[in-house]
Image (cartoon, rainbow, N blue to C red):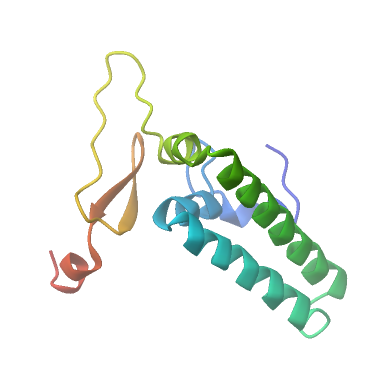
Length: 129
């Protein structure tokens, strides 16, 4: 996969399978929360353009989040959220492969050897479980 500083920075490659931070964030949020995340980041990069780093880089990142938000809204309108969630979460099991199911009420995503799964609720993490 090719890298560039705006749309695919190398420092966001988290897993050998190509999953990136944005994939984990998308999987951990509801569709509405993810839309808000993209909108907030779009505004952040537009507002700070020229204040932190090169203006063109900030504006490029803002446009990346705008495109991500538009794509996300298009997926929501088409009713493909289930397909999108299945692809992001990796819950489409290969033949003869068992996958761990998300814990009921889980809100926190953790990587595993076979993809992303939800392992604990925030309350469980605070209790040290």
